[in-house]
Length: 120
Image (cartoon, rainbow, N blue to C red; front, side, top):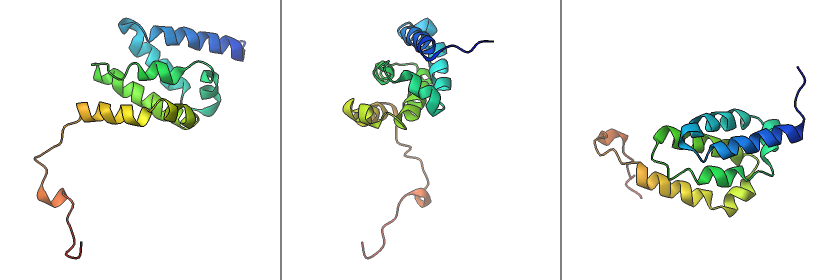
């Protein structure tokens, strides 16, 4: 089997990014992106594709499994794309997402809460 050239692989990944726009194909596209974002050599294929922007558009998604895959992809891309992620204010967007979706567990035992020392 002949391995595809870098430009052919990038073309295929561009096509995968278009699948993010349709709900029916979104989860499968995220699985592919997640697999490709696992190592540096494959992450480099996304360099000119604005993958982080495409992923960030999906964060308001109501489907929690999709949001988790998006978050996993962003974590993988954060290794090589720090400047892009900072310029896109990813930390703020992820914080807003968590603030809206995560609820405090008020039933935790007192022993698990932080305690102050007398000198604090």
